[in-house]
Image 1 (cartoon, rainbow, N blue to C red):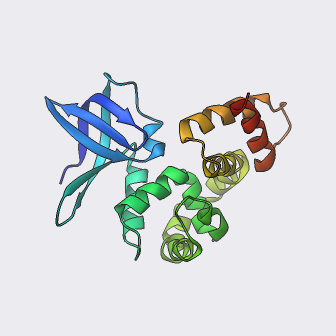
Image 2: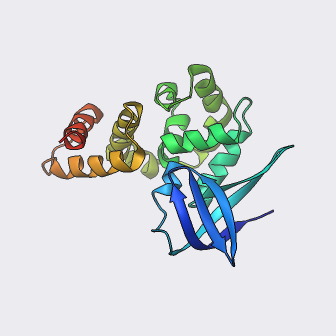
Image 3: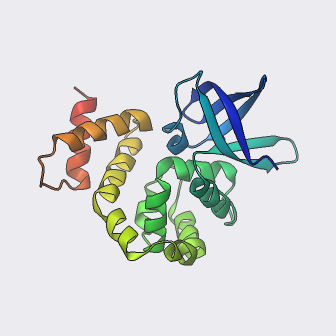
Length: 200
């Protein structure tokens, strides 16, 4: 089992990173969440890994942290969810917000992830609700239920409209900064503000 890779980031794309480890280049499949954490090409990087074995191939998946890798493995344990779909889910929603949505039974939020239908979303909730709920104390629930969940909802909406995650994240940061201090924007307002920046 390959626990992690540490070396020079030779190249990166939204779903793939190439890491040079002592002259051997490893192509690693990653989520958009992990992509956002990567440094520029040429710098040192470490990714936790999961080796997926198929009859015709060996595929490495890389993760920014242990939590994301654990959720990836838990998702694969659900009937009908393979490695690629698990990675797609982690690209469509942050690990923290996924835990909150699943533990609260929010099937609707999961169906907003591209490629996830109602039946798959329901299976995720049924299979993981209890284990995810155990990891959320009251403080985490309160924090995740505030501005973070609004931002993630706006991010999902922008991705559904065809914007890639880095561009959407940048626009949301600008939109959030434009909101006056002490005022709370809902997901719809934040999405509209981000769209204005993206289309300006």
